[in-house]
Amino acid sequence: MNEEIQSFLQYLQIEKNYSPLTIQHYQLDLNDFVRFMQKEGINNMVDIEYLDARLYLTDLYDKKYARSTVSRKVSSLKSFYKFLTKEDKLDENPFSLVFHPKQEKRLPNFFYEEEIERLFDACKGDTHKDVRNLALLELLYATGIRVSECSNLSLKDIDFSFHTVLVTGKGRKERYVPFGTYASEAIKRYLDHTRHVLVKGEHQQLFVNLKGGPLTDRGIRHILNDVISRASLTHKIHPHMLRHTFATHLLSNGADLRSVQELLGHSHLSSTQTYTHVTKEHLRKTYLSHHPRA
Image (tube, rainbow, N blue to C red; front, side, top):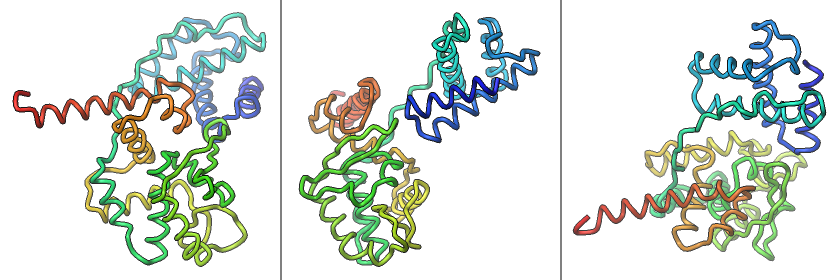
């Protein structure tokens, strides 16, 4: 079993270019399934049949897993057995007919424009911390890049001539994302007055922490939580909130869906279409709040 799993994980790494964290999640899901198989007395991955797959799904429900967790585990196993069929290790995918539980549809949370302004105001100041935080916030809002993508940016990725940043996204796919004047000025100020004072060592990461090392995903989340607190907003920040805000504001102001898809680095348009529901809901609430006969 271990040999088949390792072959699959290597396939995800080499051919699919999945990130180490994504591969780790696949491995955890597969390990969980192996434990279930051993409990059922099944010692070979290729001996699994459709009824065993159904039994595993029932076991997940009995353990009261969230629908999103069940959905992810089933998806991981579908991919794994699809790989085994492709490698001619078995004839049929036992998970191909297993019902994929629908995830709860939640509209992405975002900041309204006046809330964004309060966030920027909370970063105004002349300390190294304020200058760095404003540059970070401006770039995240200007580009809609993921927190993980932001933490991986290096100095060479910023092009002030064309006002673009080279971003390495999921599956190591690269894309150029433009940024505006506000972000440009904030980043230049950070580079001219702050980064060289803070940085320690020879690393080329764009954003650094107050100890001089590269700013991590966790560090960025901590900064955003601190800014939220200083702006006296009641939101609970999550890593994608500025990304959601970027997409929602673009669509609300007339941007076309395909352009937003490209800027976000989404492989499928359906991922971007989520934000059209957000803008429609916002319009509905505005109508109900302001129309005399609503």
